[in-house]
Length: 356
Ligand code: 5AD
Ligand code: FES
View 1: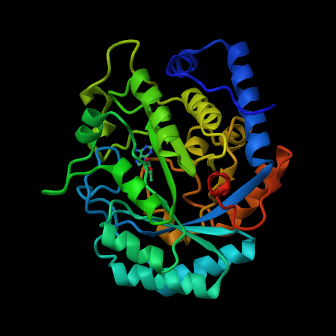
View 2: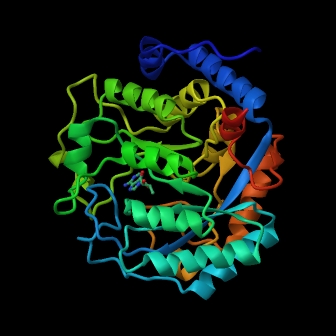
């Protein structure tokens, strides 16, 4: 195959609404072939460290939102984070992802020191996923050696975005602008959306996929919206649903469609088969994601006593396992579908192309 024909907005919309099994099988096959051609058969592993569950924001979908008083809050120490990073090296991972709520108890200097220590003591690439911080913080962490930044824009529909993300006083939230800034200062950038947010239409989802292309993302993670009862979006009967026939379902099938279309639209992107997908299909959601466009997995390396407190949505996969269990589980799943475990850091193929 030479290249990928450019999908129009109409094509994207038609595929999102497609329900014929034979046609969908063709979509999966096409996405898998493009994945094979553009990013190969290696599956890169990113060790996920959920290092703080404090959050100052009130995102209407997230179990860690500041209003949820039932969450026992924690912050891992620098030494605990470093121990996880060394464990990730032991497993052969090329990257650690440091993820937290939007926690202003995590200072610029403290996180900068953690990044510096990981870079000094290990060969790991470091990805940060700590929310909407100031340009000063983001630039400082880049100087400390951080390589990549993840910030999902969640939905490209501005009205829907505003409805589910109460702003911080006086600060306008513009995640696409922040992503462009992150890229301009040298980060590899990752983003993504939730699928099936109450009020999200097929048109919105097609816009999301077009925005992936426009932002020229290095990494794109998507997963189904999973209602959490301790959040404003947790009660079905209280939601503002889109008109009949327009509301996107938060289904496993819709997630595969978005993964596959994302691969076709952004052939060089690193696309994870996400934990949310593994949660809606514990049996083989990860494998199906990897067979329908994805090329990355993010095994959790957070110590068990903390990970059970990082419940962004209910019944989250891997919440009771250890790092070692997740490692064995992922290895097995990757090998069971005839793929190889990636070697090295798994840097963005997109970047290499862009530099040429
Ligand atoms: N259902 C699905 N995904 C969620 N996330 C947060 N809360 C939920 C939920 N209830 C996702 C968001 C966020 C990522 C870390 O987890 O997309 O960016
Ligand atoms: Fe954690 Fe399978 S990846 S148990």
